[in-house]
Length: 152
DNA sequence: GCCAACGTTGGC
DNA sequence: GCCAACGTTGGC
Image (cartoon, rainbow, N blue to C red):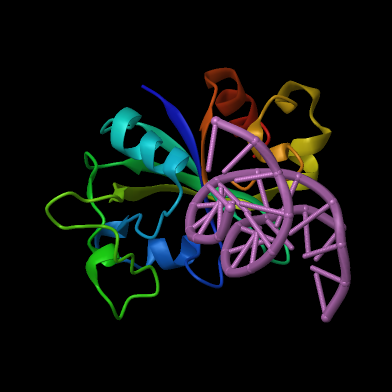
């Protein structure tokens, strides 16, 4: 099993939005970055766990956990000209972008802020604390996962 | 709102 | 294949 971190702008899709979704599940659409796509398409397995991270907002940080509940499959929003993530270069016969389903696991009683993550020496190798990191999906090491759960 | 850092595009 | 220009991300 592998651990991940999923970034989302809460003004776009927050952990509360996930909680209010049918079956507390959503498809993680809109990823238009090859590295992040490769993580989903090639490495994610049903049962993997992920942190839900709120980016670009008042209180950035980890707000809960999710479970990956599907294998990857083509991101159909890339085929829809009316969708904001439309990509004419993604051909339904040869899809360029993929997504997985994620289901809410836990909503933390508080936000584990980016500042806290940065201040923990145990987490200094985490990609999300690195300056300029823009990857919306990043792998998390098991010891980092456990350490962060201990911060809640 | 600012701007640094990054990924992608496209001319050559 | 290089790299400048551009658009986007995301912290502050």
